[in-house]
Image (cartoon, rainbow, N blue to C red; front, side, top):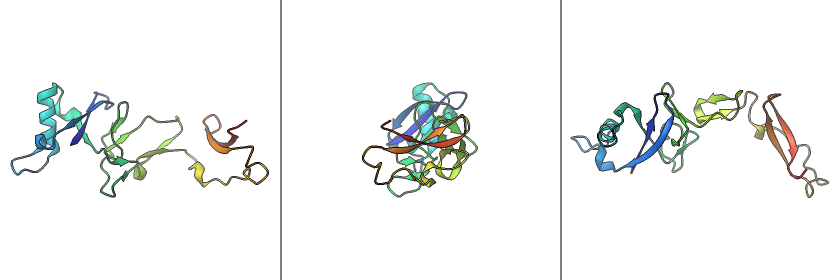
Length: 149
């Protein structure tokens, strides 16, 4: 099965449809995106160029089965199609975050929380506290918080 995202005029994903691979075959029996787009235009009354193929097995720039990642992320309703980078982007989590093209994901302007050390999880607090980093958009910092507090 092939999957296609239906786009709005502003490149927002409106829905995702599946298509039989046989509906995408060209004269040489090769699956071709443009054939699938034409099929979808004919059967859904939506312009062919507003249908973009997406891969169910792609997330964060990685293919789940070790294959070649296709268009960054599997498209979902509300995602945005980035024509220049050929990536489907989820909603931006915070206004300060930036696109990280190679991982097809949003990153904080100061890096990932996983790179931070956790000084609070020593033996004295491990049973009574669960510490984690939470993004603070106001200060553009990762703040260490106690989930049990």
